[in-house]
Image 1 (cartoon, rainbow, N blue to C red):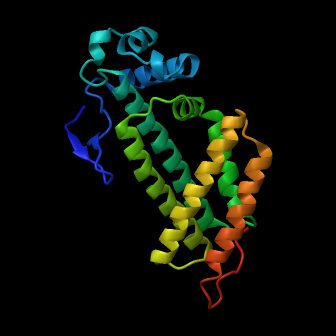
Image 2: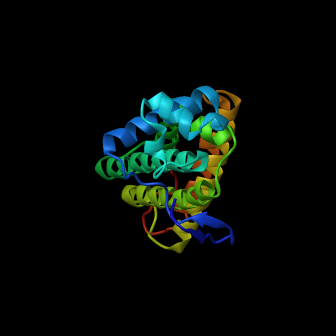
Image 3: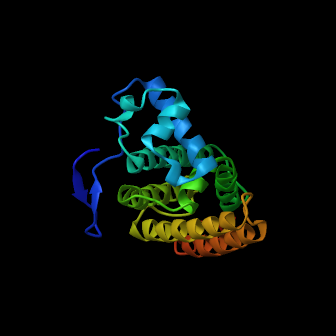
Length: 222
């Protein structure tokens, strides 16, 4: 792990997630094994020896990159964040290419599907044991997701690029994330009624945001 720094809340946190000194194929195999252990047995089972055995590699080969449970959690979380952000980038590209009748529905349905398939993500967030680095990285991740939502709205032509939009998208992401997590705490498939309520809330809120922009911007989102 790299030397600690301090996050905005004044809490010491690693400067970055673990990076592989070992080969890329072995790194991927080890993280796949770590995810299997996480999903099947929970965060307390994420030890270097347990994961090395699952991956079929010598435990000593992980000492530099993944020396302990925290490093394994951080590495898994970094991968989940990257996948979620890649999906947001794809949504921005799609929004630029074609008009959506219900952009809120498209975005929330896309991420609900991702929650359903990312069993490790759910196991990590709902199983406890998140590290200081992971919590700090999650705050940065939400900022990037809010930026993605803003880029979607800009691509759809329903807002202008200003601080008001950035602030509104942060609020939307924080609210939607809390509702989505509660929906998937209730059931692995996501509580459909609660997810529908999240869409109603986000449509109303983002429509109100869009209405702040006169001169031809649409008054409704979704």
